[in-house]
Amino acid sequence: MDTRITVQALKYGNRLHYEWNTKLLEATDSHIVVLGEYGRELHHHTKGKIFTTENWTIELFPFDLWFTVSADVRNGVLYQYYCNINEPAVLRGTNVSFVDLDLDLVYRNGEWKVVDEDEFAANAVKFGYPEELIRRAREELKNLQHRVNAGLYPFDGTLERFIRFVPAI
Image 1 (cartoon, one colour):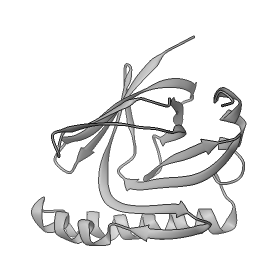
Image 2 (cartoon, rainbow, N blue to C red):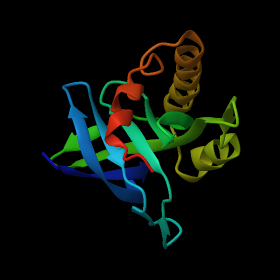
Image 3 (cartoon, helix red, strand yellow):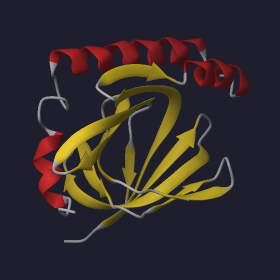
């Protein structure tokens, strides 16, 4: 099976933000896991540019949780994470999409950090986020931080089992 999945990140109001193509690794009723291949193109519609991605990623898109996870793989190890706070992902055919709510939790250089809080504040005004959505996004960020700190799904080894799909370089 070599099912290609197009990932679409949307901004509030379903505005296409960026997209890229991946390879499906696992599909369940609650999530999909895909492989982002080295050299894939990321079409950034907001910036009007195409970027070439020079890393392998294992990416998780839950349908019932308010985050996504993209884990960079190098030398058989997950060494960097980028987690979006977003409305739950939606799978339609071979497209998975999510509404990105700007807040991100990243792991780089051995440290977890919240980033893009300024972008969240600006877009809350620009796109007119309802107060309930603002509250929910902040709450979901705290929930994600708890998952990370407690080693709960998917930070419990769930993603590591997909490392075998990344070619040794």
